Length: 149
Image (cartoon, rainbow, N blue to C red; front, side, top):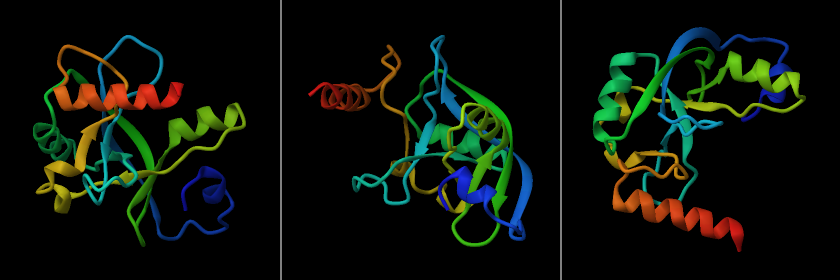
């Protein structure tokens, strides 16, 4: 299950629970979000996805492994799947997207077992700042250039 429409089609929410979760995004004064990302396969060119943690302390430990950048931590009420792959839907995001007839994608739920995998976490490319690493700058430029041709 990847979208809110699939979630809303469920007749039974057994295997789901409501929890406060935490996520991080780059600090900026622009429209949009630039969240921290996680990939189960690290640098192997697989899909990087936004993630939430059930513990603010765990999120803090993960952020210590990432490139130091200015960020904010947000607390969100989420619906977490307790069976199968750990995913969540953020209520606020779903409500905002339903108002404009759009789907919301699920986010990953990261737990203690992922702490020893620093290459599996990174910041969303796209926001250039003086606090980014040369590798992050190169990736941001590569993504931007790919979009224009």
